[in-house]
Length: 171
Image 1 (cartoon, one colour):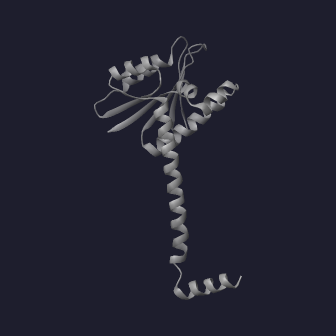
Image 2 (cartoon, helix red, strand yellow):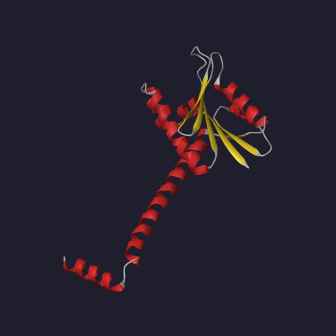
Image 3 (cartoon, helix red, strand yellow):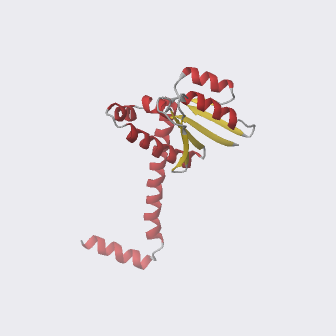
């Protein structure tokens, strides 16, 4: 079954302390970039397709969609909220062979998308998934490095191992 995660971008930025801090300092674009970087890693790790929606309802324009680092990013059009676009995406993407998750802490939005068959992930739950993923990747890298180190010596014959050990002890 295909899984899709639709993320309310500014809702997550406002909920995660490190991103909220960047936003408050006037670095909204940097906060967006950090979120997109992490979501790109998350997509690779989880296997879920990721779509991010940013609310641009106060900005004139027709809205836009673009692919950024293998994830799909939407900016809403003029007079459209992120919630409206997310609801439309959930409706359009709904399929019996597809599970859609929406990451938002907006309670009203959670109820609406749940009624359309999507499951919700709160900003806090997504942050927990982020921590679990980062720890898992770190453990995997450490395990891989240990394996590489052990494989170097496992490929040497007994005579070479003895020679290296003698050399190490002389130092």
